[in-house]
Length: 64
Length: 186
Image 1 (cartoon, rainbow over the protein chains, first blue to last red):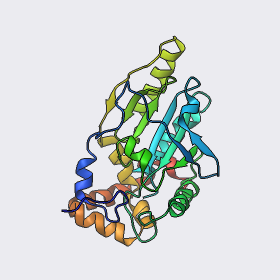
Image 2: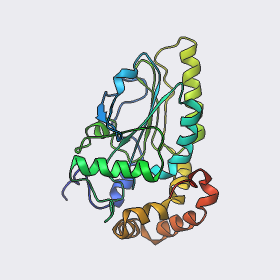
Image 3: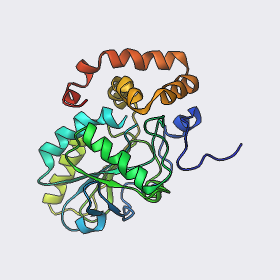
Image 4: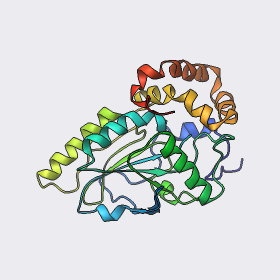
C-alpha cells in the first residue's frame, strides 16, 4: 500500500479513522509553530506578529 | 465540516473581534470533486480559497497554506481543527473539530480573563469530541457535496457506506433548523 500524497484526490475511510484523534501538532502549553502565509485579499498573515498583542484563534479548513 | 463550523465561528468573530484575532488557514480539500479537485498548484489553491470566502461570506482573515501543506502538517493535518493561541504564542487550547461554538466561547473567555489577571501561558487543555461538529457538518453535507461535485459524493458513499451516507442526507434535510446561521450563504 502506497502512502497517500498530502493533496489526496480521493476521500478515504482510512483518513477518517486517523482524524478521530490529534496526531502531532503542538500540544496545549507548547509554542505554536509560526507561519507567514498569503491571504485571499493579497496581504500576508504572520502569526508571530500577534505575540504580546492579543490571542489568535486559528481554524484549519477547506471549501469541501 | 468547515461550512458546518461557520455559524458558530461567525458568532465568535462578531463577539470577540476587538480582542481576539481570528484566522482560517486554507488547507487541502477534504472531499475533492470535479468542481473543487485536489490542489495541483498554489494558484489553484488560492482560487479555491477565494471561492470559499466568497460563497460562505467569510468575514475574517483567510490565509492560504503552501501547496505541500507545511503549516497544516506542523499543526497535525486535521480537516477542521481549531487552535487558540495565547499572547505568549503558546497553544492555550485546541479542538479536533472547530464546529463547537459553546466550547470555544468558554475557552476564549477563560483565556481573556486569565490574561487580564496577568497570567501568562494559559493551558486550557484539548478536546476531541465529534458529536456536535458532526451534527453541524452533516447538516451541510448536501451543500458541500453539490459544490464539490458528483465524485466527492460517490467517494463518500463508497468509503463510509449507505448508513452513514443516509444519515448525512437526513441531517441535510434539517439544515435550516440545525444551522440557521448559514442562511445567508448560497
